[in-house]
Image (cartoon, rainbow, N blue to C red):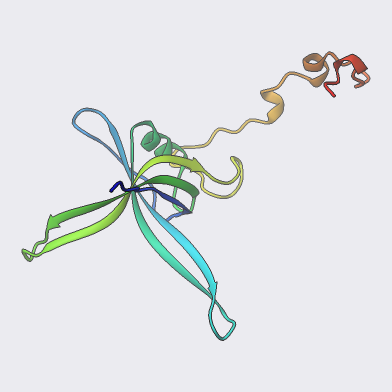
Amino acid sequence: MSSFNRVILMGNLTRNVELRHTSGGTAVADIGLAVNNRRKVVDGRWVDETTFVDVTLWGRTAEVADEYLSKGSPVLVEGRLKLDTWQGNDGGKRSKLKVVGERMQMVGSRNGGEGGGNRQARSQRQDDYCEPASQATGASSTGSIPDDDIPF
């Protein structure tokens, strides 16, 4: 029988990114994610349930998370579940279910108030990236576009 192990979570970071490197130089980042679920109970009240999930990111994804995310940043993570087991101080066996993040997507605006990153963010206006519309489209200085250039 085949199996399928895929997790998609969207939530907010509960703490700043903890970046470290393996002896081979691979970046590893641990993040905590708070995922909220709102549901209506029998008496009609809304109840919020928060699930806290530990996520491990690897490689370039870990470096990007460290550079751009901080406590409170909204993020979408896709990955797989992994069960970590270890021997506790009292000699008992301990285990914890966590997510190994394979993809990460930052959510929210670049310049908005959410997140902020561990390093100072650079922001530029869109005009700094684009050439003027009249040059890009061949439009005249009055802003009109010739009918031959309209694709529909």
